[in-house]
Image (cartoon, rainbow, N blue to C red; front, side, top):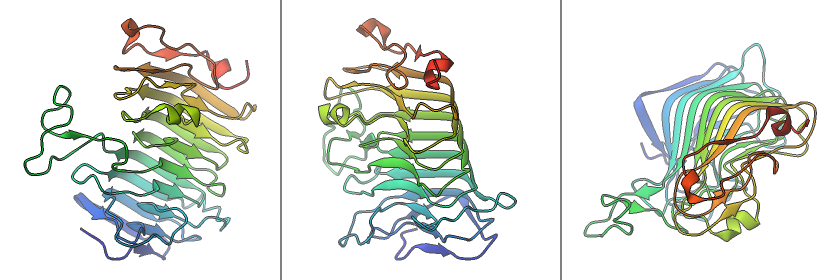
Length: 300
């Protein structure tokens, strides 16, 4: 369903449910598929695929996204007795087309939101055009492998400073061009997280210290359990310094965090904040590397 304008959610307890994973294609002006207004509580969104489009006009928004919940700076705490809910939400930038883009897939600026099963995907492969040959036939002879400059999106999930008390169970973010997830709200919780770094990254990805999961320095309390960061650098020998970054504070709790180098070149050199081992040779492809929980939490 290609949208000319965003679906505006302005009423408490409004529900949007997609039947058969209905796909909403973002408007060409950079607006999100769905915009939930600040101070609107009890909203439920479920069973939706969000898809980026080719930008047809100059974007007027500071941060483009496919779903926007609340407005930056609104200081909307949400309602713990009637939280917002995102259930079974998929987002994709690319797949069919390669000239699509956005800035982040989902941005949250209101508090007390609960997420269950979110998969936010920058395409690692796209459909071949008529008569086009695959660019990496030894890897994939049915599709085109995404290259730098295609299917552009910086982050999968962006949790803003005002988005406190956000909990997500089952979150996957893959292949975005900068930090996969950025978390700036306090009292966030994530249970099961998977991130795969972009195949087409070059050394600038490492030089800018982009990572798979980033908790901002201002955050005092955050909990993440079961976090895996993977690399498969297809084009360049990239060495990322660590998989997860967070402030070293007593309220930061990280448990069962690991990295894996799947194949090809480069590696993730450490697990969390420079702690924990990384691979030293090609024989360690597919091997998980972990750090002790007290080091992961910055308390050791």
